[in-house]
Image (tube, rainbow, N blue to C red; front, side):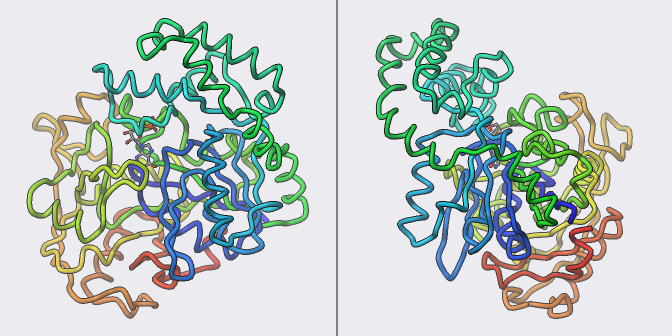
Length: 428
Ligand code: IMP
């Protein structure tokens, strides 16, 4: 059975957690392939809310096995905290969650470096979770992997080496000896905790694939935050795009059969950087309040904008999307008119594609098409035909303009509030 990749088609926070949770019912394995606890999903399951940052939302689905993959950066404290939270709430985790031995470990040093840079005038609005500095160490080949973390003597040696390399910056925070003590504090207990989950996850997934298991590969963040393809330098430090799924899960491209891109019915972004269709004022405040557009990880208010078709076309291209999911359509109820960006003007010239140069990304002016909008409560719609005519027209017009089927429409947080237009087409 070919694997399905679910990616964010915008700047993150598209509602992937809910969709992965929804699709998880039909999967045997759910794999997170990049990022760390910078991500945040709120998933509603059995009427209860769960905020997950690191562990795939497949964990809420009994029987589904979950992997935190090779490409993820893992803060052992966050990992343990999340496992304990789930267990406290009655979710069975042991035997269903596997942590890659190749994943890199986030230490307090990385959090200090992230915060130092953010607050020292070089900020891009990160989540200050140490994600960037951890990936930097990985690329600099001084990173510490889960396999190293589990080996106490390697771990101690590698920590001292990395402290030496980063000493000039770290001593601005506090004396190195103090930082070293913080890194080692509670280490033994955490090492033993992590050891229960650590595995060669590439091997596990390969065995599952050979047996015909359904594997769902879940990205964190969004395509426009991709290190290579996003709005650089206002990006995260990994590859959320579908190509990243192979690298970050340790599976080959031939494993993948389909890619679903999740987009809101409008656009949001947190952190700094270009956002061509951003709106401010009353409308932004209205959508932020109705859509509860505040970061799950940082609580920051999200920036709000209209749907941006050139941006989505770029996401379709860079991910090879075979289908789309549109979330939060209910939030736009009562908004008249609804605008959609169909192209840009750049210094007087019409352009159709999302530009690459950073100045162009800031300077483009959106060209909009308007839709009348719709009213009424969409939360009880379960079939596409239950939606008000204006809502259907909006979805169908976006689908037609993008040339990719919108197979799922979400009208609320809970799993039931999901309209699947063609379930068979999803997995390819
Ligand atoms: P970092 O990933 O913490 O290094 O932050 C880099 C950029 O990615 C910033 O603009 C963050 O706001 C953004 N970012 C990171 N994780 C998420 C997420 O899960 N949702 C939305 N934006 C995110």
